[in-house]
Image (tube, rainbow, N blue to C red; front, side, top):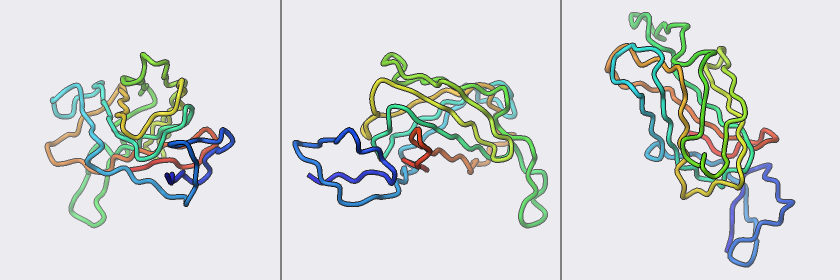
Length: 173
């Protein structure tokens, strides 16, 4: 059996798959759009203080400890009259946003810390767990203090990335 590992994967534990290990290549894992969902706790437009639940099914084996980053779009477009559009400086998340594992919590997984980076509009979450997360499992994380979109237009610009504890990219959308 051949297994592909992400670039920078810690192979010191001699991972064994099906009785043998063969590392054939390193790949950049891209999580398909169909394996990612975002749900708000409120359907009210422009409401603040909602809870955002992000669900994703990883492509790679996620490490026991690592970093999950959630990048969100600007809250609204100020002007569509010129290209590129002028976006609000407000984000859909804030410095008060906090995160919690909704899946895997019963197995000892937790978000140890989360910090909001305003420049990239990203919530950076350091997590720890009791084991690696397999690619057939769905990861669900709830994020507080979410601002719902101001209109019903489809919202693009949500991005998820996962890094191991050394900062190597494992998965991304």
